[in-house]
Length: 441
Length: 177
Image (cartoon, helix red, strand yellow):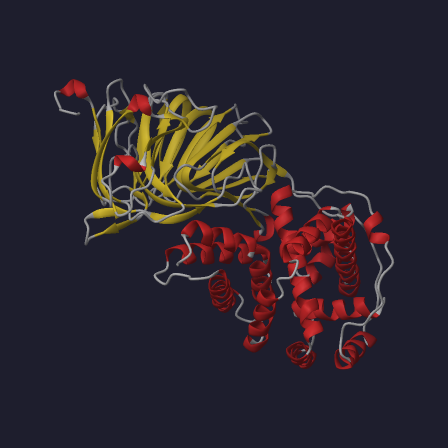
């Protein structure tokens, strides 16, 4: 090992906290005095930061190219003052060298494969490793998926062909050690589960309920107050954790497990959809801050990174979002002629993007659709605004989404400006239809 | 004239590797360093004080990242040592002043990391992406702590040589043109 590598090793041990306290302080004193030592420290930390960033972009294994660049002759110039070299020598003299190599690393068993995804998604796997650059085809072992924006979603498949889709801001922990065990901490999940062995059904837990799934298609929504389960095909068993009562929920039925004390615990026929809806701010806020001063939902910053474009710089959004059809509320159907009526204010006119998340009325995530109001639509200099956006105007955010949102159920909505804080505030949002004698321009 | 939000983000992204490296020295966890960088970016675009120059912005970003990093270490790694503040101030100053060919140097570094052979890349991945301590890296691949440090040292030295080689070739091309 030459002098340069000795000096590098010393700094790596300093960074790894693998020096005794006295040596640690000595190295730090040398670094404060010696410019070349600091230059080396900066290089090493850049190597660390860049290596980690590239791994995030590339995925599990970076491409492996030729080794020719690493066979060049090394320069032997010393970069340290004599003081640091002395310290390095004293530390390294007492160390023994072990070259025992087995070369085999354990690989945890993969549980799910990513089938599709959109928006900011993070995976925390074995040992607390967090990955935020995920790709279609990534195979993930047991861990936790977090979706960090209202328009984020991910579809994952198990080895047996079962599929689950998470949408909106959600947190789900997944494991499979011979039995699929999921924990939905918050958010929305759709699942299409193939037949499971009776002895090892899929089990999904929330803070209020436990679902036993043998083979069914269903949706569930979890927040701090309730767990709501709607079954579209098959049957599943729901247990209320507070008292261990169990109920079988069949197709077209739903059940609500509430945090409040409710003696009744029965599956009921899913409510019919409605065609109108009005926000009940400050209730239902998904993103943004409620301002009592302005009686409005104020858009908040979100650094949005698209998992599908990992090399693209993140985009700064100023976002406000609320839920529409959650908990036990009936589904809200987007019908021909209906309009999204938005009232609010903006301080600096900018293009405003309005989005909808939709579900199939029979259950399951359907897609996301957008509409735009150009900055010219606002009063010059900013101020109050009121828009009526026909549902027909919304277009799919991704090519794989339905061409129109008509006929789908409105799940949540959002609006945002890009890169700049325009002072966007939302006072109310409604879905209105013209067929009910309600006037809409 | 103040810098616009769009330019703030562009300038911060250009300095991202250096700010992340400075943050990493304190938190020793690449994912946390990235999260802190993102927080700094958001703060830069939403704080009340505006920036009149790139230098003012980047200087503010280094200091803010350092403060967030120290807070993070105090919350999550109570027993860990935090580098001397004076040392960090000097490092940040040098990072900001040493901008000669910074872009091409970091670009060369990225290419060199991407070109690493499999086992060497795995070592960097375990240590810096997975965030394992050198002891844990050794356990994972079945070698002792000292061997891990020696191997890591060689990888880092290789990267330095590779970067110098690439910059040298680029300089030769530039001179010919």
